[in-house]
Each structure stands twice: as C-alpha cells, then as structure tokens.
Image (cartoon, rainbow, N blue to C red; front, side):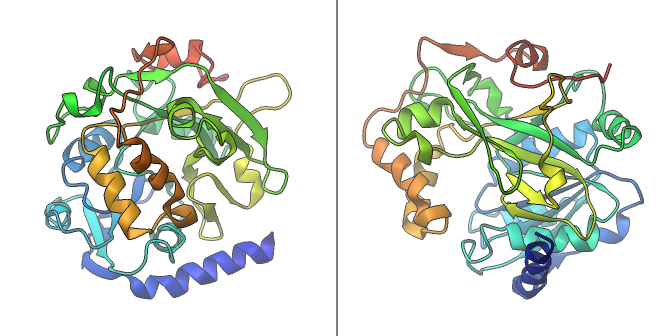
Length: 328
C-alpha cells in the first residue's frame, strides 16, 4: 500500500503538466483555512448556488479544474475573487476521472488544511450544520485526532418528471429535488482498503434493477485534514493510507458522520447523460451514463410510494443515514 500511494502521488505529479493556470489566487490562502477542491465541466447553471452554499458554511477558497467547458463556466469562475482556476482539455478518463489533477493540487496547496472534495452537484451536510459552521466540526475533529470525515451520498430527486420543474441559476436544487430513498441500501466492506461500500437508492432500483452490484457507490470521504503524503484512490470513495477510510465504528458505537446531498436529478440531467455517453470519459466506458441514457427514452420518474421528503439533517440522523456520534 505504501508503494501504491507513492505511485499515485507520482502519477498526480506527471498529470499536473496537463493543467494550465487560468487565475491563481492561492497566495490569499491563510494557515488553517478550509479549502474546497473540485473538477467541473459545463456546470455554469449550478455554480452560483454551489459556491454560495460552501461559502456560507465556512469554505474560504476554491481550487477548481475546468475540463474544457464551453458554456461560460470558466469565465464565471475566473471572475470569483475566492477561486483559483486551472484549465485542461486533457482526457478526464485518463486522469482517473479527475482524481490525478486534484491529488496534485491538494498536495501542493492543501497540506495542513481541512479540504472538501466534491462535485458541483454535491452538498455536504454534517451534524448541527443549521447552527454551527464547518469550522466547529473540523475543530472538534482536530481535538479528537480524527483526520477524515465520512459521508453517504444521498440521491435527491423531484416528484414527477424531471423535465417538469426547470432549474434556475442560483436556485437551491433541493427546492426541486427534495425527495430521497430512506432505505433500500446495501453495505459491504472492501477487504483491501477497509472502507465500507454502500449501494442502492433510486439509481439502483431505476437504472440497475437487474445488476445491483453495478450500481454506483454511495460511500464518500469528502472532508480530510490533508497531508501531502495522502492520495485519493477512486474518486472520494477511498484513500491511502488506509486508516483514513475507517470513518464508521465497528464496535457498537457511532462515529460522527454526514451526508452529501446529491442533486444530479434535475431537468439538466437528460442532456448531461447523453453528452457523457458520447464523450465516453466516465468509469467503465461510461457504463453508468449509458444506463441513464437508455432509461431516458421513456418518462423518468424516480419518486415512489416509499420516497421520503427531505426536512433537515436531524431527520437523516433519525433514519440512520448520518450520526452526530459523541459530538454534542
């Protein structure tokens, strides 16, 4: 595993040559600030709310890789005073789906900082997020010598057809996609890396009903006190060293954990799915997106009679999808 981590760090350094600096404001970063790292392509409609959401909870600087957008999102990001931006036209697939690019940037700029790594359609929920900033959580994690914070990716969706409610720039997507599956999840343990592997939810029952083992993974570790020796292995599903993956308690207690609200399923979803099928830049030759596109030929309704309407993080804790642990 030590050699595997060194290979990942070397690969990230090599892939860094694919990044062209658009605007570098990293000199603004102060010791101890919370940073956010992300890769995006043609997400301009999502960016205003995404940036404001994370600013509001305490992120002070955004380090973003633009993968050859054509919708004006690069120009929009470059104009934001708390964003440092890199551009690349290189293959997303050959960078291990952006992981190599972000591993490099985190190693260079994230060392010693709490770092959030999310996509523009992912929104971090943590215990007491309605009353406490993210800094309160990271300070407590520091006091407990906890280096990583685990979450479950919770797919959100509307009631009715996805096309019925247009999404507007700057809008909270959960105003539209406000439903989720409260159950229907399977959990197993990865014996090599030690992380839990969670699958299920609306994507499994709608797009992979006959192949549930091929449904997308829902376990993520998006918040880490970064060290330049660390490396993500597969998206934010797992890291090296392996101890960072042990974010859930196995001995009857509960470690503090959160949820990533995943707002993929809004009216922009169909166009995105067909675009990614054509690009073939996602995992397993875009198998997931081919499943999406195949199902989009008919009216797509993810809502079912077991769907739960989202209220707040306390509701998710009651349902067992996250936990405040012994953080009070």
